[in-house]
Image 1 (cartoon, each protein chain N blue to C red):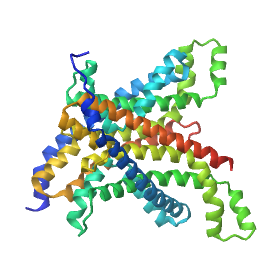
Image 2 (image 1 turned 30 degrees about the vertical axis):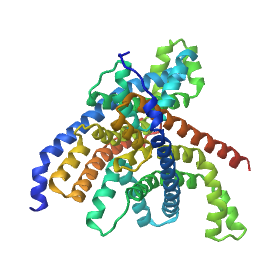
Image 3 (image 1 turned 90 degrees about the vertical axis):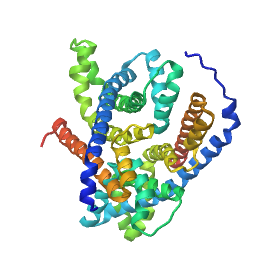
Image 4 (image 1 turned 135 degrees about the vertical axis):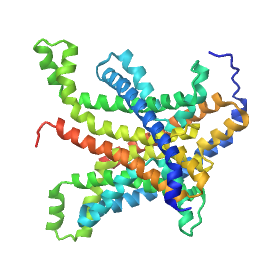
Amino acid sequence: MLHYHFNFGLIWQHFDKLDWGLVVSLELTLAAVAVSTVLGLAFAVAHVSGGRGVRALVAGYVECIRNIPLLLLVYLVFYGVPTIVNLQYSAMTSFIVTLSLYYAAYLVEVFRAGLLAVARGMQDAGKAIGMTAWQRLVHVRLPIMFRIVLPSLSNTYVSLFKDTAIASVLAVPELTYGAQWINNNTFRVIEVWSVAAPMYVVTGYAILFLLRRFERIYAMR
Amino acid sequence: MNFAHVLFEAAPSLWRGLEVTVEVSAVSVSFALVAGLLFGTALAYGPILLRLPIRAVVDVVRGIPVLVLIFFVYYVGPAAGLELGSFSAAILALSLFSACQVAEITRGAIISVHHGQMEAARAVGLTFRQCLVSVIFPQALRRFLPPWINSVTDTVKGSALVSLLGIVDLMLAIQQVIGRTYRPMPFYVLGALIYLCINYALSSASRRLEAHFAYVRD
Protein backbone atom coordinates (compact mmCIF):
# COMPACT_ATOMS: atom_id res chain seq x y z
CA MET A 1 0.00 0.00 0.00
CA LEU A 2 1.14 3.50 -0.73
CA HIS A 3 1.14 6.22 1.90
CA TYR A 4 -2.19 7.50 0.81
CA HIS A 5 -4.73 9.07 3.10
CA PHE A 6 -8.16 8.02 2.04
CA ASN A 7 -10.72 10.75 2.31
CA PHE A 8 -14.21 9.81 1.33
CA GLY A 9 -15.62 13.01 2.82
CA LEU A 10 -15.40 14.88 -0.46
CA ILE A 11 -17.13 12.00 -2.25
CA TRP A 12 -20.12 12.11 0.13
CA GLN A 13 -20.15 15.89 -0.13
CA HIS A 14 -20.60 15.60 -3.90
CA PHE A 15 -22.58 12.38 -3.79
CA ASP A 16 -25.52 14.08 -5.56
CA LYS A 17 -23.37 13.95 -8.73
CA LEU A 18 -23.28 10.18 -8.38
CA ASP A 19 -26.80 9.33 -7.25
CA TRP A 20 -28.48 11.75 -9.66
CA GLY A 21 -26.02 10.49 -12.25
CA LEU A 22 -27.29 6.99 -11.64
CA VAL A 23 -30.86 8.25 -12.10
CA VAL A 24 -29.87 9.75 -15.46
CA SER A 25 -28.14 6.46 -16.40
CA LEU A 26 -31.38 4.64 -15.65
CA GLU A 27 -33.39 7.17 -17.66
CA LEU A 28 -31.07 6.63 -20.63
CA THR A 29 -31.44 2.87 -20.13
CA LEU A 30 -35.24 2.99 -20.04
CA ALA A 31 -35.52 5.20 -23.12
CA ALA A 32 -33.02 3.15 -25.13
CA VAL A 33 -34.59 -0.16 -24.03
CA ALA A 34 -37.99 1.02 -25.23
CA VAL A 35 -36.82 2.36 -28.58
CA SER A 36 -34.38 -0.46 -29.37
CA THR A 37 -36.91 -3.16 -28.45
CA VAL A 38 -39.53 -1.72 -30.81
CA LEU A 39 -36.95 -1.28 -33.59
CA GLY A 40 -35.39 -4.70 -33.04
CA LEU A 41 -38.76 -6.41 -33.02
CA ALA A 42 -39.87 -4.65 -36.22
CA PHE A 43 -36.61 -5.53 -37.99
CA ALA A 44 -36.78 -9.14 -36.79
CA VAL A 45 -40.35 -9.61 -38.03
CA ALA A 46 -39.37 -7.97 -41.33
CA HIS A 47 -36.37 -10.27 -41.59
CA VAL A 48 -38.32 -13.44 -40.86
CA SER A 49 -41.36 -12.71 -43.02
CA GLY A 50 -39.96 -10.28 -45.61
CA GLY A 51 -38.55 -10.98 -49.05
CA ARG A 52 -34.91 -11.31 -49.98
CA GLY A 53 -34.37 -7.56 -50.36
CA VAL A 54 -35.68 -6.80 -46.86
CA ARG A 55 -33.67 -9.69 -45.44
CA ALA A 56 -30.44 -8.43 -47.01
CA LEU A 57 -31.13 -4.90 -45.73
CA VAL A 58 -31.66 -6.06 -42.14
CA ALA A 59 -28.64 -8.39 -42.29
CA GLY A 60 -26.49 -5.55 -43.64
CA TYR A 61 -27.66 -3.22 -40.88
CA VAL A 62 -26.88 -5.79 -38.19
CA GLU A 63 -23.46 -6.60 -39.66
CA CYS A 64 -22.49 -2.92 -39.95
CA ILE A 65 -23.62 -1.78 -36.52
CA ARG A 66 -22.23 -4.76 -34.64
CA ASN A 67 -18.76 -4.27 -36.10
CA ILE A 68 -18.35 -0.58 -35.28
CA PRO A 69 -17.38 0.70 -31.80
CA LEU A 70 -20.27 2.34 -29.96
CA LEU A 71 -17.96 5.23 -29.05
CA LEU A 72 -17.38 6.02 -32.74
CA LEU A 73 -21.11 5.85 -33.51
CA VAL A 74 -21.81 8.18 -30.59
CA TYR A 75 -19.34 10.75 -31.96
CA LEU A 76 -20.60 10.25 -35.51
CA VAL A 77 -24.23 10.92 -34.61
CA PHE A 78 -23.52 13.86 -32.31
CA TYR A 79 -20.67 15.67 -34.13
CA GLY A 80 -20.90 14.27 -37.66
CA VAL A 81 -24.54 14.07 -38.65
CA PRO A 82 -25.51 17.71 -37.86
CA THR A 83 -22.84 18.89 -40.33
CA ILE A 84 -24.62 17.29 -43.27
CA VAL A 85 -28.30 17.53 -42.33
CA ASN A 86 -30.09 20.51 -40.88
CA LEU A 87 -30.96 19.01 -37.50
CA GLN A 88 -30.35 20.16 -33.97
CA TYR A 89 -30.53 17.85 -31.01
CA SER A 90 -29.27 17.67 -27.45
CA ALA A 91 -26.46 15.37 -26.36
CA MET A 92 -28.97 13.27 -24.43
CA THR A 93 -31.30 12.76 -27.41
CA SER A 94 -28.33 12.04 -29.64
CA PHE A 95 -27.01 9.40 -27.24
CA ILE A 96 -30.40 7.72 -26.77
CA VAL A 97 -30.83 7.52 -30.55
CA THR A 98 -27.34 6.07 -31.04
CA LEU A 99 -27.65 3.55 -28.20
CA SER A 100 -31.08 2.47 -29.47
CA LEU A 101 -29.85 1.97 -33.04
CA TYR A 102 -26.82 0.08 -31.72
CA TYR A 103 -28.79 -2.26 -29.48
CA ALA A 104 -31.54 -2.71 -32.07
CA ALA A 105 -28.91 -4.59 -34.10
CA TYR A 106 -28.26 -6.94 -31.17
CA LEU A 107 -31.96 -7.36 -30.41
CA VAL A 108 -32.78 -8.23 -34.04
CA GLU A 109 -30.58 -11.30 -33.67
CA VAL A 110 -32.19 -12.22 -30.34
CA PHE A 111 -35.75 -11.83 -31.63
CA ARG A 112 -35.01 -13.49 -34.94
CA ALA A 113 -33.62 -16.58 -33.23
CA GLY A 114 -36.69 -16.61 -30.96
CA LEU A 115 -39.15 -16.32 -33.85
CA LEU A 116 -37.43 -19.19 -35.67
CA ALA A 117 -37.58 -21.30 -32.49
CA VAL A 118 -41.40 -21.13 -32.29
CA ALA A 119 -42.65 -24.58 -33.23
CA ARG A 120 -44.05 -24.82 -36.74
CA GLY A 121 -47.08 -26.72 -35.40
CA MET A 122 -48.16 -23.66 -33.38
CA GLN A 123 -48.51 -21.59 -36.53
CA ASP A 124 -50.23 -24.41 -38.39
CA ALA A 125 -52.68 -24.71 -35.51
CA GLY A 126 -53.36 -20.99 -35.72
CA LYS A 127 -53.93 -21.28 -39.44
CA ALA A 128 -56.23 -24.27 -38.93
CA ILE A 129 -58.58 -22.32 -36.64
CA GLY A 130 -58.75 -19.53 -39.22
CA MET A 131 -56.39 -16.85 -37.85
CA THR A 132 -54.99 -14.31 -40.29
CA ALA A 133 -51.24 -13.91 -40.66
CA TRP A 134 -51.33 -10.80 -38.43
CA GLN A 135 -53.39 -12.60 -35.75
CA ARG A 136 -50.98 -15.52 -35.82
CA LEU A 137 -48.08 -13.12 -35.34
CA VAL A 138 -49.64 -11.17 -32.47
CA HIS A 139 -51.44 -13.97 -30.62
CA VAL A 140 -49.25 -16.99 -31.35
CA ARG A 141 -45.71 -16.25 -32.47
CA LEU A 142 -44.80 -13.15 -30.47
CA PRO A 143 -46.04 -14.37 -27.04
CA ILE A 144 -44.23 -17.68 -27.45
CA MET A 145 -41.14 -15.94 -28.81
CA PHE A 146 -40.98 -13.64 -25.77
CA ARG A 147 -40.89 -16.60 -23.38
CA ILE A 148 -38.08 -18.15 -25.38
CA VAL A 149 -35.93 -15.02 -25.63
CA LEU A 150 -36.48 -13.56 -22.13
CA PRO A 151 -33.15 -14.77 -20.66
CA SER A 152 -31.04 -13.38 -23.52
CA LEU A 153 -33.22 -10.27 -23.57
CA SER A 154 -32.40 -9.61 -19.91
CA ASN A 155 -28.68 -10.01 -20.56
CA THR A 156 -28.84 -7.59 -23.51
CA TYR A 157 -30.68 -5.00 -21.40
CA VAL A 158 -28.03 -5.21 -18.67
CA SER A 159 -25.28 -4.72 -21.30
CA LEU A 160 -27.24 -1.72 -22.56
CA PHE A 161 -27.30 -0.28 -19.03
CA LYS A 162 -23.54 -0.68 -18.75
CA ASP A 163 -22.99 1.02 -22.11
CA THR A 164 -24.80 4.16 -20.91
CA ALA A 165 -21.41 4.98 -19.31
CA ILE A 166 -20.28 6.09 -22.78
CA ALA A 167 -22.76 9.00 -22.62
CA SER A 168 -20.15 10.71 -20.43
CA VAL A 169 -18.11 11.58 -23.54
CA LEU A 170 -20.95 13.87 -24.65
CA ALA A 171 -21.13 15.42 -21.15
CA VAL A 172 -24.51 13.86 -20.44
CA PRO A 173 -24.58 14.11 -16.64
CA GLU A 174 -24.88 10.40 -15.88
CA LEU A 175 -22.97 8.30 -13.33
CA THR A 176 -19.61 8.11 -15.12
CA TYR A 177 -19.72 11.82 -15.93
CA GLY A 178 -20.48 12.55 -12.28
CA ALA A 179 -17.53 10.42 -11.25
CA GLN A 180 -15.28 12.22 -13.72
CA TRP A 181 -16.50 15.57 -12.40
CA ILE A 182 -15.58 14.59 -8.84
CA ASN A 183 -12.33 13.13 -10.17
CA ASN A 184 -11.37 16.42 -11.82
CA ASN A 185 -12.63 18.79 -9.13
CA THR A 186 -11.54 17.09 -5.90
CA PHE A 187 -8.67 14.89 -7.15
CA ARG A 188 -9.99 12.14 -4.86
CA VAL A 189 -9.47 9.76 -7.78
CA ILE A 190 -9.08 6.47 -5.94
CA GLU A 191 -12.09 7.08 -3.73
CA VAL A 192 -14.45 8.22 -6.46
CA TRP A 193 -13.84 5.24 -8.76
CA SER A 194 -14.03 2.81 -5.84
CA VAL A 195 -17.51 4.18 -5.19
CA ALA A 196 -18.71 4.53 -8.81
CA ALA A 197 -17.68 1.04 -10.02
CA PRO A 198 -19.62 -0.82 -7.28
CA MET A 199 -22.64 1.39 -8.03
CA TYR A 200 -22.65 0.00 -11.57
CA VAL A 201 -22.16 -3.59 -10.37
CA VAL A 202 -24.96 -3.39 -7.79
CA THR A 203 -27.41 -1.63 -10.12
CA GLY A 204 -26.64 -3.99 -12.99
CA TYR A 205 -27.25 -7.07 -10.84
CA ALA A 206 -30.37 -5.50 -9.34
CA ILE A 207 -31.77 -5.02 -12.85
CA LEU A 208 -30.81 -8.60 -13.75
CA PHE A 209 -32.43 -9.91 -10.54
CA LEU A 210 -35.71 -8.11 -11.29
CA LEU A 211 -35.74 -9.33 -14.88
CA ARG A 212 -35.03 -12.92 -13.77
CA ARG A 213 -37.99 -12.75 -11.37
CA PHE A 214 -40.13 -11.41 -14.16
CA GLU A 215 -38.95 -14.29 -16.36
CA ARG A 216 -40.14 -16.81 -13.77
CA ILE A 217 -43.54 -15.18 -13.34
CA TYR A 218 -44.05 -14.86 -17.06
CA ALA A 219 -42.96 -18.45 -17.74
CA MET A 220 -45.35 -19.94 -15.17
CA ARG A 221 -48.45 -18.15 -16.43
CA MET B 1 -8.71 21.73 -50.42
CA ASN B 2 -10.46 18.72 -51.82
CA PHE B 3 -11.06 15.66 -49.68
CA ALA B 4 -8.49 13.48 -51.48
CA HIS B 5 -5.78 15.95 -50.53
CA VAL B 6 -6.96 16.16 -46.91
CA LEU B 7 -7.07 12.39 -46.75
CA PHE B 8 -3.55 12.15 -48.13
CA GLU B 9 -2.32 14.52 -45.43
CA ALA B 10 -4.15 12.63 -42.71
CA ALA B 11 -3.17 9.14 -43.82
CA PRO B 12 0.09 8.80 -41.82
CA SER B 13 -1.52 9.72 -38.48
CA LEU B 14 -4.50 7.47 -39.16
CA TRP B 15 -2.12 4.64 -40.01
CA ARG B 16 -0.20 5.10 -36.75
CA GLY B 17 -3.52 5.12 -34.90
CA LEU B 18 -4.56 1.92 -36.64
CA GLU B 19 -1.28 0.28 -35.60
CA VAL B 20 -1.95 1.20 -31.96
CA THR B 21 -5.52 -0.13 -32.18
CA VAL B 22 -4.26 -3.42 -33.62
CA GLU B 23 -1.52 -3.62 -30.99
CA VAL B 24 -3.86 -2.93 -28.06
CA SER B 25 -6.41 -5.42 -29.42
CA ALA B 26 -3.86 -8.15 -30.15
CA VAL B 27 -2.23 -7.93 -26.73
CA SER B 28 -5.58 -7.87 -24.93
CA VAL B 29 -6.99 -10.75 -26.96
CA SER B 30 -3.91 -12.93 -26.35
CA PHE B 31 -3.80 -12.20 -22.65
CA ALA B 32 -7.53 -12.75 -22.34
CA LEU B 33 -7.34 -16.06 -24.18
CA VAL B 34 -4.66 -17.50 -21.88
CA ALA B 35 -6.16 -16.16 -18.65
CA GLY B 36 -9.71 -16.95 -19.75
CA LEU B 37 -8.92 -20.57 -20.63
CA LEU B 38 -7.24 -21.08 -17.24
CA PHE B 39 -10.06 -19.38 -15.30
CA GLY B 40 -12.73 -21.17 -17.30
CA THR B 41 -11.18 -24.60 -16.78
CA ALA B 42 -10.83 -23.82 -13.08
CA LEU B 43 -14.50 -22.81 -12.98
CA ALA B 44 -15.50 -26.10 -14.58
CA TYR B 45 -13.24 -28.52 -12.69
CA GLY B 46 -11.54 -26.64 -9.85
CA PRO B 47 -12.13 -27.23 -6.15
CA ILE B 48 -14.64 -24.90 -4.52
CA LEU B 49 -11.92 -22.81 -2.86
CA LEU B 50 -10.51 -21.99 -6.29
CA ARG B 51 -13.90 -21.64 -7.94
CA LEU B 52 -15.41 -19.16 -5.50
CA PRO B 53 -12.80 -16.37 -5.81
CA ILE B 54 -12.66 -16.74 -9.60
CA ARG B 55 -16.45 -16.69 -9.82
CA ALA B 56 -16.51 -13.53 -7.69
CA VAL B 57 -13.89 -11.75 -9.81
CA VAL B 58 -15.53 -12.80 -13.09
CA ASP B 59 -19.00 -11.68 -11.98
CA VAL B 60 -17.83 -8.37 -10.55
CA VAL B 61 -15.64 -7.45 -13.53
CA ARG B 62 -18.41 -8.33 -15.98
CA GLY B 63 -20.73 -6.05 -14.04
CA ILE B 64 -18.57 -2.96 -14.57
CA PRO B 65 -18.78 -0.99 -17.83
CA VAL B 66 -15.48 -1.32 -19.75
CA LEU B 67 -15.08 2.47 -19.71
CA VAL B 68 -15.39 2.59 -15.92
CA LEU B 69 -13.08 -0.43 -15.60
CA ILE B 70 -10.42 1.41 -17.63
CA PHE B 71 -10.67 4.47 -15.35
CA PHE B 72 -10.77 2.20 -12.31
CA VAL B 73 -7.55 0.35 -13.20
CA TYR B 74 -5.84 3.59 -14.21
CA TYR B 75 -6.72 5.57 -11.08
CA VAL B 76 -7.17 2.91 -8.38
CA GLY B 77 -4.29 0.69 -9.54
CA PRO B 78 -1.67 2.83 -7.74
CA ALA B 79 -3.47 2.31 -4.42
CA ALA B 80 -2.86 -1.42 -4.83
CA GLY B 81 0.79 -0.78 -5.73
CA LEU B 82 0.19 -0.96 -9.48
CA GLU B 83 1.88 2.14 -10.89
CA LEU B 84 0.80 1.88 -14.51
CA GLY B 85 1.12 4.25 -17.40
CA SER B 86 -2.05 4.96 -19.33
CA PHE B 87 -1.09 2.47 -22.03
CA SER B 88 -0.54 -0.47 -19.66
CA ALA B 89 -3.57 0.45 -17.57
CA ALA B 90 -5.81 0.50 -20.64
CA ILE B 91 -4.47 -2.84 -21.87
CA LEU B 92 -4.79 -4.39 -18.41
CA ALA B 93 -8.40 -3.24 -18.05
CA LEU B 94 -9.37 -4.40 -21.53
CA SER B 95 -7.61 -7.76 -21.03
CA LEU B 96 -9.20 -8.26 -17.64
CA PHE B 97 -12.69 -7.64 -18.97
CA SER B 98 -12.14 -9.85 -21.98
CA ALA B 99 -10.53 -12.60 -19.85
CA CYS B 100 -13.66 -12.76 -17.72
CA GLN B 101 -15.82 -13.11 -20.84
CA VAL B 102 -13.53 -15.85 -22.18
CA ALA B 103 -13.62 -17.63 -18.79
CA GLU B 104 -17.38 -17.75 -18.96
CA ILE B 105 -17.31 -18.96 -22.59
CA THR B 106 -14.75 -21.66 -21.73
CA ARG B 107 -16.77 -22.87 -18.77
CA GLY B 108 -19.91 -23.05 -20.92
CA ALA B 109 -18.09 -24.92 -23.68
CA ILE B 110 -16.61 -27.44 -21.25
CA ILE B 111 -19.84 -28.24 -19.42
CA SER B 112 -21.62 -28.61 -22.77
CA VAL B 113 -19.55 -31.78 -23.33
CA HIS B 114 -21.43 -34.75 -21.90
CA HIS B 115 -19.90 -35.88 -18.58
CA GLY B 116 -19.90 -39.46 -19.85
CA GLN B 117 -17.01 -38.47 -22.12
CA MET B 118 -14.86 -37.65 -19.10
CA GLU B 119 -15.90 -40.87 -17.33
CA ALA B 120 -15.15 -42.97 -20.40
CA ALA B 121 -11.76 -41.30 -20.86
CA ARG B 122 -10.89 -41.88 -17.19
CA ALA B 123 -12.12 -45.48 -17.47
CA VAL B 124 -9.68 -46.28 -20.28
CA GLY B 125 -6.89 -45.01 -18.05
CA LEU B 126 -6.12 -41.50 -19.32
CA THR B 127 -4.84 -39.04 -16.74
CA PHE B 128 -6.91 -35.95 -15.99
CA ARG B 129 -4.69 -33.80 -18.15
CA GLN B 130 -4.86 -36.28 -21.06
CA CYS B 131 -8.64 -36.36 -20.73
CA LEU B 132 -8.80 -32.57 -21.00
CA VAL B 133 -6.39 -32.25 -23.89
CA SER B 134 -7.44 -35.23 -26.03
CA VAL B 135 -11.12 -35.68 -25.16
CA ILE B 136 -12.83 -32.64 -23.63
CA PHE B 137 -11.13 -29.68 -25.33
CA PRO B 138 -11.45 -30.96 -28.91
CA GLN B 139 -15.18 -31.43 -28.40
CA ALA B 140 -15.62 -28.17 -26.52
CA LEU B 141 -13.82 -26.27 -29.29
CA ARG B 142 -16.78 -25.96 -31.62
CA ARG B 143 -18.89 -24.55 -28.78
CA PHE B 144 -16.07 -22.21 -27.85
CA LEU B 145 -15.23 -20.66 -31.22
CA PRO B 146 -18.38 -18.67 -32.15
CA PRO B 147 -18.76 -16.78 -28.84
CA TRP B 148 -14.99 -16.35 -28.58
CA ILE B 149 -14.83 -14.59 -31.95
CA ASN B 150 -17.67 -12.39 -30.73
CA SER B 151 -15.58 -11.50 -27.71
CA VAL B 152 -12.60 -10.74 -29.98
CA THR B 153 -14.65 -8.27 -32.02
CA ASP B 154 -15.95 -6.82 -28.74
CA THR B 155 -12.36 -6.30 -27.65
CA VAL B 156 -11.46 -4.57 -30.92
CA LYS B 157 -14.49 -2.33 -30.47
CA GLY B 158 -13.68 -1.81 -26.79
CA SER B 159 -10.15 -0.74 -27.73
CA ALA B 160 -11.68 2.52 -29.01
CA LEU B 161 -12.28 3.41 -25.34
CA VAL B 162 -8.53 3.63 -24.65
CA SER B 163 -8.63 6.92 -26.57
CA LEU B 164 -10.33 8.38 -23.48
CA LEU B 165 -7.08 7.89 -21.52
CA GLY B 166 -5.31 9.90 -24.21
CA ILE B 167 -3.79 6.97 -26.06
CA VAL B 168 -3.64 7.87 -29.74
CA ASP B 169 -5.35 4.82 -31.25
CA LEU B 170 -7.41 4.91 -34.42
CA MET B 171 -10.32 6.56 -32.58
CA LEU B 172 -8.25 9.42 -31.16
CA ALA B 173 -6.29 9.76 -34.42
CA ILE B 174 -9.61 10.33 -36.19
CA GLN B 175 -10.62 12.90 -33.57
CA GLN B 176 -7.30 14.72 -34.00
CA VAL B 177 -7.58 14.73 -37.79
CA ILE B 178 -11.10 16.13 -37.49
CA GLY B 179 -9.77 18.76 -35.10
CA ARG B 180 -7.27 19.83 -37.76
CA THR B 181 -9.48 19.61 -40.84
CA TYR B 182 -12.99 20.41 -39.53
CA ARG B 183 -14.47 17.61 -41.62
CA PRO B 184 -16.19 15.37 -39.09
CA MET B 185 -18.51 13.30 -41.25
CA PRO B 186 -16.11 11.89 -43.87
CA PHE B 187 -13.52 10.93 -41.27
CA TYR B 188 -15.99 9.34 -38.86
CA VAL B 189 -17.39 7.31 -41.75
CA LEU B 190 -13.87 6.37 -42.83
CA GLY B 191 -13.05 5.28 -39.27
CA ALA B 192 -16.28 3.26 -39.09
CA LEU B 193 -15.33 1.53 -42.34
CA ILE B 194 -11.86 0.65 -41.03
CA TYR B 195 -13.29 -0.89 -37.85
CA LEU B 196 -15.90 -2.65 -39.99
CA CYS B 197 -13.19 -4.15 -42.21
CA ILE B 198 -11.14 -5.44 -39.26
CA ASN B 199 -14.12 -7.00 -37.52
CA TYR B 200 -15.72 -8.31 -40.68
CA ALA B 201 -12.45 -10.04 -41.59
CA LEU B 202 -12.37 -11.57 -38.10
CA SER B 203 -15.93 -12.84 -38.28
CA SER B 204 -15.55 -14.32 -41.76
CA ALA B 205 -12.34 -16.05 -40.66
CA SER B 206 -14.29 -17.46 -37.74
CA ARG B 207 -17.04 -18.81 -39.98
CA ARG B 208 -14.37 -20.70 -41.92
CA LEU B 209 -12.85 -22.00 -38.67
CA GLU B 210 -16.25 -23.10 -37.42
CA ALA B 211 -16.90 -25.02 -40.61
CA HIS B 212 -13.49 -26.63 -40.21
CA PHE B 213 -14.11 -27.77 -36.65
CA ALA B 214 -17.74 -28.81 -37.05
CA TYR B 215 -18.54 -32.47 -36.37
CA VAL B 216 -20.08 -33.04 -39.77
CA ARG B 217 -18.01 -31.57 -42.57
CA ASP B 218 -19.64 -30.61 -45.81
